[in-house]
Image 1 (cartoon, rainbow, N blue to C red):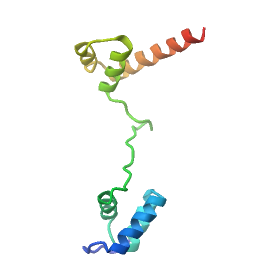
Image 2: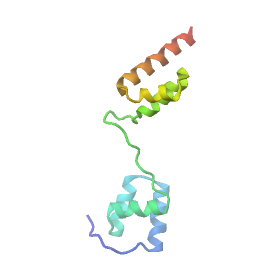
Image 3: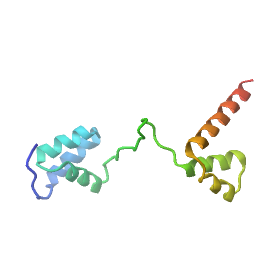
Image 4: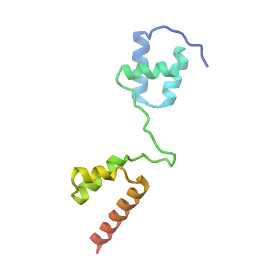
Length: 116
């Protein structure tokens, strides 16, 4: 690993980093330029963020899927079942796994009905 210094990025470094990252927005690109410029990984990410080009990694659950918030599930229930605001809000206190199972079962039942 390269030694890091507390020097600012030159205009040339910024242009090179931004153009390389824009062409290939991966962690490997950031690591390559951190090594090349003698900067930390966080420094390169911060620079790319300030330049407005950094793409934050999407959060995924342990199962590898994008997590869904209970509020989003409640909103979906509200739309499907024409619930009022307080009825939908009360769903956010329910168990997330149960809400997900109910919603998925309902959607599957709808698909079955539509197919008939």
